[in-house]
Image 1: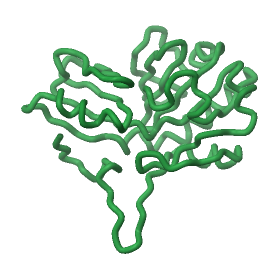
Image 2: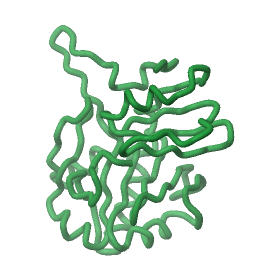
Image 3: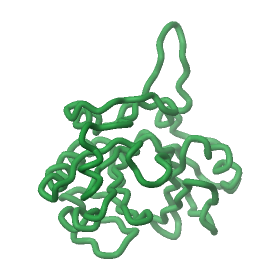
Length: 208
């Protein structure tokens, strides 16, 4: 699976001369401030657990899934790519984003057309997962978008909102990830929610 912008792919980083590369999410500081427990997963430092997350998830919790793999495909595939935890989000008839857990990388690559332009955009996006019975209420406080999946203004920046089960995923450019996570946390706190680790998600934690 070729990637013209390989520097965006943390999976290609290698240990060398005592250096151990670990990718970090733009939202990491918020989770550190909440005393989250971090674990290394698939080359990323991931917030796995957060104190008080059970209470947060009972209303609305925000988890950081930025470690999911992300491919930018042009043209968009004719059919959605298949695999456990794999999501195909069509930005336009000519472009799609594919989100996948690390274990599905090879299977995803096998389904990409040989003539497609494939950019590994894993490090280009922050992914926030919203879970809990008030997840829809939180989305409503962040955006005027009503139909999902959809892209547009979310907390005054451009982002993409994808429904997943009873929850949502919000994709935003990584340079805006901390800002959007901070705004989402303020809104979630007003609803009685807050940050949660990936272990608190009701579905398999790597699934987009």
